[in-house]
Image (cartoon, rainbow, N blue to C red):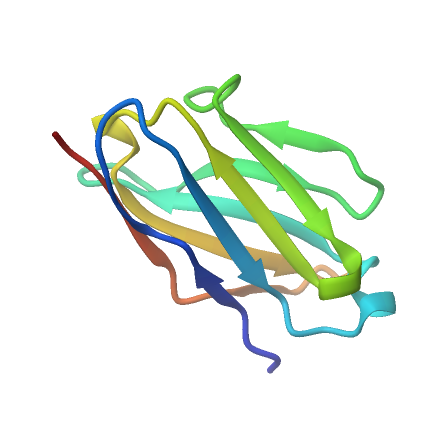
Length: 118
């Protein structure tokens, strides 16, 4: 199994910004076949969708982050990014990246911690 590696988490004050990265460790060509997504696990809640970008380029955001977060991808680096702005304490949690192969198999990273606190 090719590993997924998330990075960029940390501690930020409310209203601040963070940029997360997720390396899918795939060839540039194969990466274009993948649907990539960010999920998060916040305290007391089930894991929820943050943002998803399909292999065709369509994008979906979770309701809680619309207008504040932006997902993007760089196929040449087989990497997907999550820009997070106007962060709120409710955004605190572990952020996971996953990749979905054309056969439907999904692989998860280990997660990166985001903490939003004054």
